[in-house]
Image 1 (cartoon, each protein chain N blue to C red):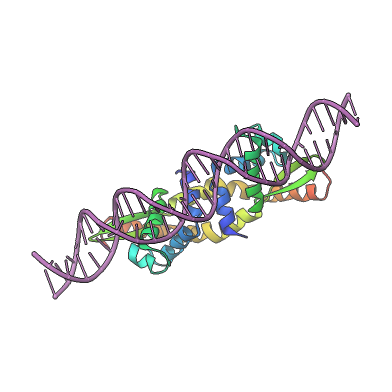
Image 2: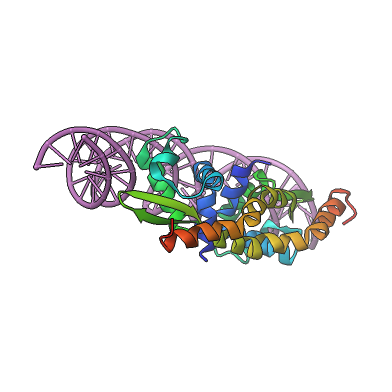
Length: 105
Length: 105
DNA sequence: GAAATATGCAGGTAATTGCCTGCATGTCAA
DNA sequence: TTGACATGCAGGCAATTACCTGCATATTTC
């Protein structure tokens, strides 16, 4: 997993919207996804390319169409590496902050 | 929570490194953090500003120093909103992908 | 108060990003 | 096979980003 590509891919509202759209209905084509986006097809296509490069979306060609599927694996790995680490220490970290704000050092 | 600020803040390796450094030792000053970064102090300061704007880091002034603390709340909310959603559907999404690759439609 | 220390602010620049238009390629259907 | 449809590729442009330098401010220490 390339954490940088995954995070950068998620750092754009259009791309997060694309993931949401695919979550509602997996396997949509570029054309279908475009209908919900209010931007040129080529722009959406670039966003999908970035999601694909981050391995968050996998594609399958079906004749002249290209169907897009969410790949949940990298997101799971991001969770394991990034979120859980802070989640485990969450209460301790909040405690540090609280104590410092109270000025107790 | 401003999801966009949080994701954009996380979408840079230097800023993720800063969070890791703070996770090792919470409450470090700008100067301390800089020693591990190999870039000008001002650059690191900008990165910390972005983390602070995303509410991922909170700061407390202590005389001429500024101490930095991780705020785990936004990351938790990102997890709730983004990761769990796909995590719950993870096996189903993988199944969609597998079936499509196998060409079974 | 003067020197050293910790940080803040302003601006400049090269690289990247996100959007677009125009054109090319590949596929289906009449 | 021709016209319609789905997508790919190339390039251009404005905005943003990530880095820097130079200087200002605030705090501690001698």
